[in-house]
Image (cartoon, rainbow, N blue to C red; front, side, top):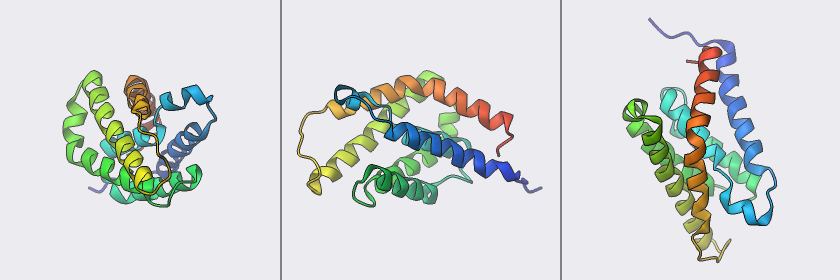
Length: 164
């Protein structure tokens, strides 16, 4: 028996990414920029883990291109990093579902850290940045701290709107 998608299912996923985009571009003071959680990769990790047959590598590429446009970075920079994150999440999604929230937060720390490292490395290669400090990785820590709450919020939203 095929799973029948409700018309609002796709809109809930799109709306969650829209909110993540808004949170990603909200202006922060200069001292707090390194601590801003990586909302878009976290929402992508959730949806790939929860609905791997609907949100996957193609979605990650598209989400990354929109993030590139919003941030004004080189087209494909975030897209490539998010595709790698989606691939790793797809390969581990069955295990991640069985992890405790602390274990998931640890994996999110690693995945978001990988995303930040790839983006930073690509920005260095394309001469967009020349900083050599590692403070940009603080966003991975704040993302891991926020992950259990974000996971519960997205899960509750998915269940209450019957998104599958």
